[in-house]
View 1 (cartoon, helix red, strand yellow):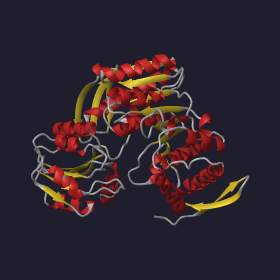
View 2 (cartoon, helix red, strand yellow):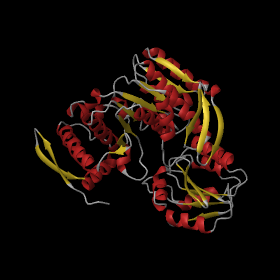
View 3 (cartoon, helix red, strand yellow):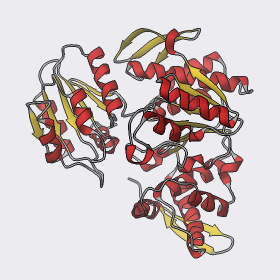
View 4 (cartoon, one colour):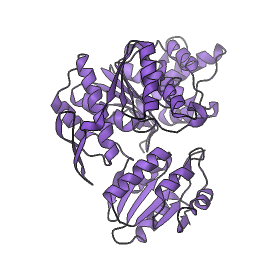
Amino acid sequence: MPPSSIIYIRDTEDGIGIMNYDEAIEYIHGTQKFGSKLGLHNIGMLLELMGNPHKKLKYVHVAGTNGKGSTTAFISSILMEAGYRTGVFISPYIQRFTERIRIGNDEISRDDLAELTGFVKSNVDKMLAMGENHPTEFEIVTAIAFEYFYRKKCDIVVLEVGLGGRFDSTNIIDTPELAVITTISYDHTDRLGKTIPEIAFEKAGIIKPGGKVIIYGQTREAEEVFKTVSAQKGAVLYRTDFDSLDLHSFDLEGQIFSFDGYKNLRIRLLGRHQTKNAALAVKSVEVMKKMGWEISEDDIRRGLYNTKWPGRLEVVSRNPVFIIDGAHNPEGAAVLKNALDEYFPGKPLTFIMGVVSDKDYNKMMETVLPGCRRMFAVTTDSPRALPAAVLAEKATKYCKNIQISDTIEMAIRTSISTSLPEEVICAFGSLYYIGIVRDYFGL
């Protein structure tokens, strides 16, 4: 890691503040103590003090339970190929904090992050002096991203929701060019609701008056919510119909499929579900074309093929085959299980699993573990991590060969050194430790 440089941050009212990259990261993560509060008052106040940079940008706003990161990646890649200066905001990151804020494929620099964090902090201090609440970590990161994209004069920002939609900090924006909603399933039920309609209503919060929204074709009860909210807000609703999606071939190099008149589209992301996320991206940019955005078929083809999204059914080793996947809820686990069955029928499977304690890990294990050869339980790098010993005890109901590993690295080494011929190893359960696995393989 290169040494941190010192950046001088000028504030016309309060003089000069100084912050380097390490101090910026310490400040950002230090705000975790203020919790995760859904609501738009804090972020609105902070951005107003900053001059409302978010109001000077155009957006594609992406929400959903699963698939929103992949869909964000596909859409932004297509817009890049079309020549647009494209900002990308995602969460969480896998290996580096700077992954969360990008222009094109270029992450925000350490120096820019340090400077912008200092700028945002100076405005947080003004908020506190006014008697306002301290913004949360996600609110601060969102504000940094808006200011960065504004300063860098982005043509369009593909903005991934952090949690939910209605009261997520990213929803402070006005009507976007397009609101995109991916699959809806059960996750964060303590904050988003315990039924599909309740969760869909929270996601539908990104639908704005007079806007355009495109949804992933899904359950009738979720779609009815989107139709109702769109009608109430005078928004135009588009639905992605997968009836025309035809998967021609797949292997560890990628997939070829046709969709809605486009023949032999190629993606390098694995799993049948990714063809649907790609199809949603295609329909999204088709709507944008109707609005005047110049995007050619070649842009779509190149954008899909060049899309990279680490940590999602990613092959990090071929001998033995070692896959990492960020599946962290029951729907994600079901998608992972289907993909493994499709790509590796009859092969012995070893899982490395680590989760945070507020996930439905029992349902995840019930879906994935039966029939596997063994499982390594690990503790993720998160304050909310479920201890490996607790996970292992729960896992015995679904798998008879359970091992507890002191470290994630040890689980990787042991699983590889004791693997059988043609065995497939899969690390999953949380993005909080997938980055450690990527680091292990030098990625």
